[in-house]
Image (tube, rainbow, N blue to C red; front, side, top):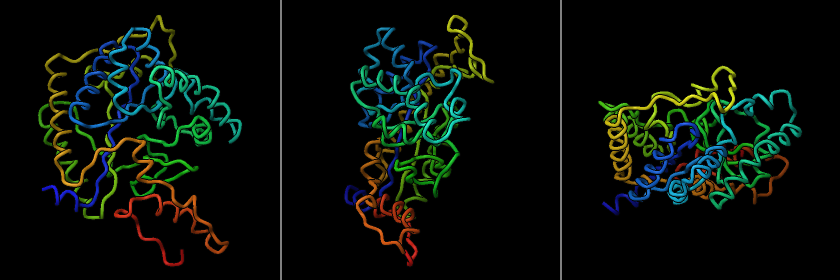
Amino acid sequence: MIAKAQNSPPVYVTLWLDTEDYILPQSDDAAKRLAVMLTRLGVKATFKVVGEKARTLERRGRQDVIAALKEHEIGYHSDTHSQQPTSAVYLQHTGWEDGAAEFYRREMPGVRDLERIFGVTPACYGQPGASWAAQTFPALKRMGIGMYLDGGEHLGLDDQPFYFCGMLNVFKMRSNQVRMALSGGPSLAEGKTRFQAAYDRLRAQGGGTLSIYYHPCEWVHTEFWDGLNFSRGANPPRSEWKLPGTRAAAETEKAFGDFEEYVTFIKTQPGARFVTAGELMKLYADRALARRFSRSRRRCRERLRFRDSTPSRSRPQTPSHC
């Protein structure tokens, strides 16, 4: 079995959790429980934390939650998430340089709070909701963040990691973005089937990356905290924020149990390896940065950069003229 796993085409599984709900207190416990569970299972995930969520944990004295998350990799998920204006709103009329400067001005305080509270510079960033803007990329590099990790549909390349603006992106993964629903019933079996299909297809192609995302609040709520309070541009004062409804205790327990079995199932697949954002940046290192390109080959540079950023077993073929 070990020899088979070593000889199998690698399938990298990046598990990331948008840790964002700073309204419902039960979400704090859900984040801790997931972090502790994954640590016990030997799986290191990427927890993308909202700045206000980190500050809320600090205000609530939840050093236990902070300590549990520190066992994993920390990413950044914006400063206040859905409070207006979101990044797509405040960047919509900006150019390239002034937009990058504005994103840095508004978001760097949240990054600094994560650095202070968790003791690390976030490894990656992902936008709140669909609030994507290209001006974020130079600002993120200035912040010391080297990767864009999210599940949007704005840009992508062959459902695999790619480089854009000098940053590794795991984005628009489509067929290679898989997750199990947390609804009980047949959701565990259906989740395993979806993962197996994507995993088998990647192995047949020589390997690659699968992306799985969740929100810790999903285990405990019946509706998203931000949809309840900030949908359609609403921006109520803190005194008017409403608590989302919560799931029955038995439903929450079932969701946690199914998720643990789902992760354990993934771990048993030959060649499957859970990786964090930081590990992906090493696996997909941009080796084209060290190349010298002749003028006649410059038009192929971006294709070469993608080829050289992918693990050797999952590299697409480069046209002969490149």
